[in-house]
Length: 397
Length: 146
Image (cartoon, rainbow over all chains, first blue to last red; front, side, top):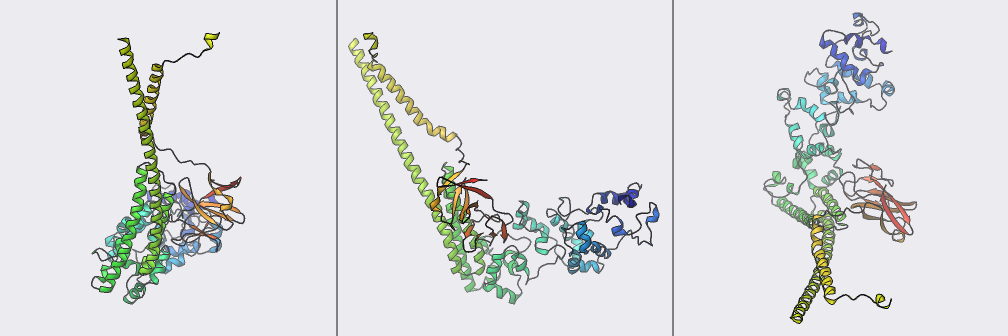
């Protein structure tokens, strides 16, 4: 069957590099399967080894238009039977999802700036998304999106900012992504891939809640949930920001100028007090947890091995993680219950360190006593030898 | 024969000299030992099997978190025997716990759920829990890395 596809073998021998490149690229792509071939997208008659292969009668189309591309790709990728035969692991709804997306709508309207399928996946050189060289591979997709979304002239027409990628790279998500955290989201983690759309103020919590499920549930139980909805505020984003989301930190809460609460409540007496109370609770817990970690670190620096200290600190970290979630309720009583877990874990850690320190001091005292006794014995024996020596010399004289 | 069988007398001065030398050596060793320990790296903790207690301390349906090779390990005794897993959630390293009521392992931080064979079956955990082997030897429960 491969011999029937004469397009690639002919184009590979052409003098014009522009016409040779597609044949070379196609040879390395996922579409090189002879059941697809060049005619899968361009039509024509691949059995004809001459230029007659470019038969208009056979529907040959060397340059599918922007709006035709999703239709051509969808022709195969929406055909469940065909896809099962070619690659049973691939879903078949991408074209339908793309048509729902903002990219798809703009592309269908003929907007040359909007990406079609080839804008992200490539043209003749389409690779599997699992290939590290694929532009849509998880490792590369943020840079792919940024290729258009960081371009000011291209985005100006839509009034879209161009600093998302730069902000994401420095954000908690971007830093975790660079460290190889498999849960850290890139652009598609929040915006979706084929059905990409920016979450709006009323839906952003659900985008965040796909990973931060507990935080979302607690937020919805808080007075903020209703208030944000009434005022059209963007849920999680109001405090955490979006692309430049900072690591969760107790300093988000409070009445200091950089605290998120002050964005809205700088002049409200009651919320200010609540923010202060919550900040004090968190600060106290953070300081006590830090004290426990420092105590274990000091013991390790002294060369002490404390059985169970690592587990106790793991319990401290677990309790701290649980507090992060419940903060979203803004309910000090619920927070205190979880802070109590931190305090118990801290107390257990400090008890282990204190026990180990007592044992170390006891061991050291025993050592000093033994060393003193050995020194005393040595001194006594030396004095006796000196005494005997003097007597011998006197007797000799 | 008679004079040869008598033990040879050690002069008192020589005996004291030996005692002084021995004491000095013991003193030097005792005094120098902490310095040797200081420059010598601490010994690695044993990585072999660890005895975590007697069989009767683990009733059926109970679980306990123990430390094996400096790592927290969740040991569960089911009706079929013992299972032991790393007690740190593969999501964000919170300490997981066994729920006898739901017969599953749960992470208290983000509702991660693992089946009784350690597979991540719910919530955000990206990977299964690492399993350790448990044996019972003459009434003692022994945990070791698989």
